[in-house]
Amino acid sequence: MNDPDQSDLEDGLRRRFDVELLVVHPTIDPLEISAALGLDASNMHRVGERRITVRGTPLEGTYRDSRWRHSIRHEVKDQFFADKVQDLVNRLVPHKKFLHHLRATGGRTSLIVQFLGDGYFGDKIPSDTLAKLADLQLDCGIECFMTPQV
Image (cartoon, rainbow, N blue to C red; front, side, top):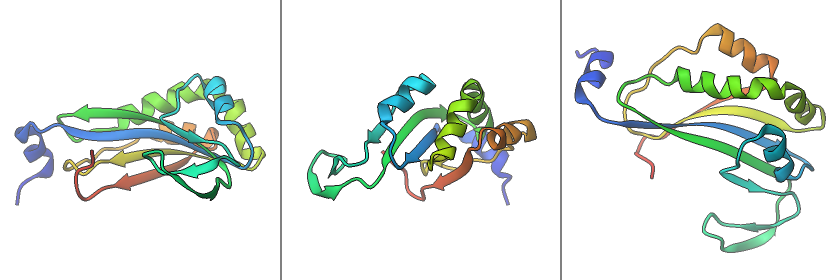
């Protein structure tokens, strides 16, 4: 049986993953989130807007809530991802008051690590980073795709 750590280092394949911040809120304008956090949204919509597909095709109805997502794509040659999680968490620390406001007014906030199906990942997120996540009132999500994503 091969050691996954060793075989991943030897194959030299690039592995992709995203580290994302997702905000779901009943009323906020997503542009306000971008301005408050100083981050661009990779995807957003406002409560009450007409629903559309990813390609822009109109759907029936309107959005029930506002959603805002900031996503950073990373490519690595090894299995490690925790430092990229730490980077985003540390960028969010100065915005603690705003993140708490989102929760206090009915919103949900999550930091999500999204593995895109490119191979093995394994790492440890340090306890100080986990403590910062809790202090910022961020949930932690993990999404794993079995087949490679575009």
